Image 1 (cartoon, rainbow, N blue to C red):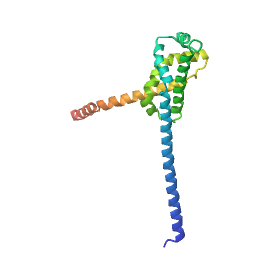
Image 2 (spheres, rainbow, N blue to C red):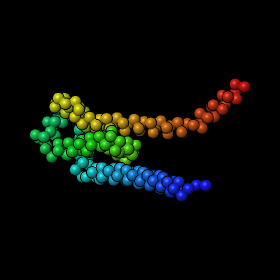
Image 3 (tube, one colour):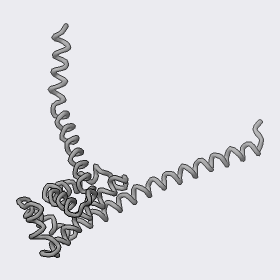
Length: 183
């Protein structure tokens, strides 16, 4: 027969296990909520007219060398445009750091803001590289470049998977035909 003390220990252990499980579930949900809140605050930051204006303005940069850009839009000649451009790069740099530290999911970032980030690099990448040389600091806005590279690789993976899925019936049919024609 089971003693009362043994039952009390079993009930205590089960209660402790249940409370640990409950606490783990609560922490997991809180972490997901925190990440969603962080992502939404990043999304709101890009709804800022100043950053969108800087992205729109960057279409004028595509035909300029770094020296021409710096002369036309640099801090000594066009402080407002330069400041907006720097704020845009700093915002993307911050997102890159959050993605690298896994605070923000790269796939979610790719789906919702990937086009902004890749468009920014297409237009501002040569300027960032020129700025690195001018300042003598290779690490300036390195996360902007790394985030762009990561998002492009995710887009390429998504394209490849979609391509394979679209070709799957043909590949399967070819495989079946080759198996039966060997016999």
